[in-house]
Every structure is written in structure tokens, then in C-alpha cells.
Length: 579
Image 1 (tube, rainbow, N blue to C red):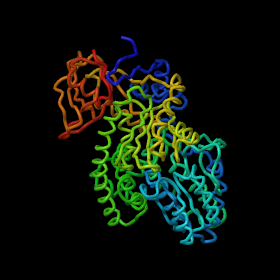
Image 2 (tube, rainbow, N blue to C red):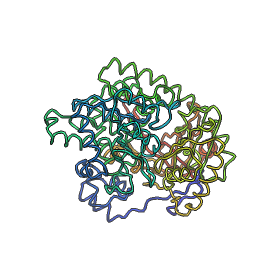
Image 3 (tube, helix red, strand yellow):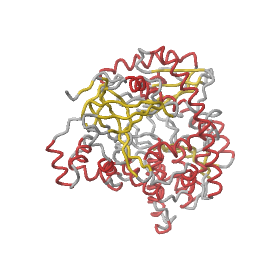
Image 4 (tube, rainbow, N blue to C red):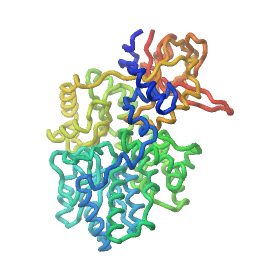
């Protein structure tokens, strides 16, 4: 059978990665690792001389001087002046995890420098994304003279013009794609600026904030404002950097890989009071990994911004009071349960609407009474189910809010910026994999037509093939083999968790569990059996195939589970090719 597998039940074309045996042998010899691990590394197209750094990434090697980022010197000089002159400073953050962690990184660092700033997180429903005139005026009225926006601000033209009008200085620290024109501010620190040459565009806002703290620390020591021995140890806030980086789904390559790898080690020490409280309320006792950051901590921190009080996440991550942290964690946990119910309702309605747009390459779905706090998660679920980029819009007249998620190869942020420049949107922006927008509901169909027309022109450039790292047999899938993968963690965007194909399997005893999932056992010609599960597959083409088909190739990830002291493997099925 060839390396290409067509007509999967998800309409995907799968291919086994081509791996050179010579390269595998060289890595095995040089690093004294297994053939299996060397093949997984080769499947990631890592150059031979970069493999050692990939396994143990160094921040020192991956991060250039922060001052090389455009406008960083301007930002540091202005903040230093504010410190010396004892000005009041505000941090204006986004209401998602990247915004909360960015705010916390600056707040905790500034406090170590002897300055306590104010944190302002806008209310998602009442104020929307980014700085707004009322908020800026209220900060000015409180005597604040410098505002640092984090994870927002790069497209806030009129709002920053207003700030200048009321003599409020603004420094923007962001990572979202800017327009060709830039807003009016003291400094615009964003490595995705066209004129920035650092190649750090993969950073989340929390990574840019960390760079700002590093540059500021160096400046404050040089001018004698602080002493090095009394200053913050930058590694102590890497848990926050890792959390924001993982939750913003930026590529885990280069410095991001180092941030997350080292940040998870810091997180395991549970030094951050808020993170520790969230782990306790979530009953997590394991050593933290990307899953815990992205699927345990992240949704709970986000829940405040989605369906509750937007500033709860930032308050949790900046407090040193364990009782207060526990109180917030309990509240966020409750809000997260509420968020799940709202998400489920919007998702079911979205799936019904999506059936009317089977021919669209980008799904634009909208509805009345949809909670704007869950539309981003629903967009992710729609992408997962239909294998297409999706934008979910909560209709609300001329203030309808939308959130989108994409697939690799389709720059949804760029498309939304074009739609804004074409006059279809009130506001909007993002990055290649995610976007946010405000639109008049009368223009929603115009947006759908615009995006699909633009995407059709780019369609021939889009990579349609999905890759499997390796073929395994059921008997070859053993816990000791999969444990080796820990050496190439963290997994995430840019370094996906390895996928395996097991060919010619028989499916046994498929059954629905937990309402939305399907469990089964699989066996191949070796007569060994392996437990498997397909999450959120009930009602999907994948779920129908598992319940009705008995012979297939299965594709998915392998997970180690423990029960009564015994380790076993379970396959998380992502797709099947029916035979």
C-alpha cells in the first residue's frame, strides 16, 4: 500500500512522513537515542545540527537582545522615567489568558522594581476588546499618566488618538498583525510589525511582555534605580509565560518552545499562588504539562472574561493571598461549568446552520442570543468537525461580535484585516490561526462572500495533506515506547503531538460513553488488543464509522493511562480510513 491514504471519513488526505534512514542513523549515533525517537524527530523536519537544541532548548540561544525589537528602547525609556518621577501607571490587558498572563508578568515585575501599577481589564460585553475612550478617561481621571496595553492596542487608532488628546501616554505591547498604518503611541512594541527584523513574530503577547521586563530590568540596573541582587529573577515568572504561550496557541518553536519547556518546570514548583489554587480546585496533582496549561488552567482563567468578571484571571495570577486565590478559583470553576453549557447550546445551533453552507471553504455562522464569550471555543469545535476555518458571530445589531479559528495554511487574521480595510467590518484583527471582529449584522453575508472569494484565490497554495509520523502495529504500541516521547515535549502548535497509523485493524465492542464519545477496542494481525476512544465523535462521520464499520486503518495519538498501579496504552482516534 502506498504512503498516501485517501478518502478518510473526515475527507482528509493522509500521508506518512518521508524519513531518510541516513539521517535517522546519524541522530541515533550522535545523541545515543532510540531509532523510534530519532524517526519522530526527523518527522518534524529538524536539521541534524539543531536536534540537540530541539531536545533541550535554551532561552539564551533563542532570544536576541530585547532592545532589537522595534520601539523597545522608547518603551523602556518612558517606563523608566515614570518610575523615577513616581508617575501612576496602568496596565490595560485583554480578557483572555494571554492578556491575563501578560498583565501579571508586568504587574509582578513592576512590584519587584518597587512600583505598583493598576491593572485594567475591560468588560467583554460592555466594552469589548482593546482600549476604549471611557476607560482611558477614567484612568486619566485617577491620575494615571502612562498606560501600557498588553495583547491589544495595535489596531486601536481612534482610541489612541483620543489618549493623545487628553495627554495620556500609551505604550502598546502586542503581537497581533498590524495594519500598514500604525496607531499614534509613545512606543509600539510588536515583533509582527513590518519594520521589525527580529523574527520573533511567533511570540504571544506574554512573550513580548517578558522581553520588555528583561530590557527594563537591564535599564533600571544601569541607571542605579535597582540593584541586581535585589531585582526579580526573570526565570521565576516563566510559569506565566508558558501558560499564556500555550493558551494563545502560538507555534511552539524557537523561543516559545524554550519558554514552555522551562516554564512548565517553574510551574511544577507551584510558586504562583493563583496557579496553585487552580490546580487544587481542579484536583491536579501531576507534574504540569501542556495539557494542564491548555485544558485545565486556561479554560478556567478564560471563564471570567467569557461569562463573568473579566479581571478575575489577572487578579488570580497576581495575588499572593492563598485564601483570596482559593475564593477566585472556586468562582472561576463555577463560571467554567456555566461556560460549558452556553458553549454546548451555541455549538448545536451552529452545526445545524453549517449544513446550509457545505460548499463554503470558510464557514461564517451567526445566531441570535449567542453568548459572545463562548463563540471562540465554538469556532474551534466547528473547525475540528468540518475541517474548515470558521467564524462564529453573536448577532447584536451594529455591535455584533465574531471570533474565528483557522487551519494551517489559511491566515484568518490577514483575511479579517483585508475585510476591515474593505469597509465590511467595524473593527477586527488577529493572527494566522485566530481572529476577532465587530460587524454590523447587515454585513454578515457580505463578510461570508468576501472571505470565500478571497480564500478561493489562495486555495491552490493551501497544503491539503495531513501527516502521520509513523506506522505501528498493535503489539508494538507499548507504554515504554511512548514514554520516550517526553524527550521531544512540549507538544502544541508548531510541534504537534505525534500521530500514528495502525493499519488493517478490526474494531470491537464500540459503545457511546459520556454522551459524546465513542470507545472501542482495536486488533490487528498480531492478535493483540488496544483500547481506543474518539472524543466528541457522536453524530460525526467519524463516530458513525466507528459504530458501523469493523475493518479500517486508524489514525491517532497514543496515551499512557494508569489503573490500579498498571500502565496501559489507549489510542485517541482522530480519523479512520474505511476498508
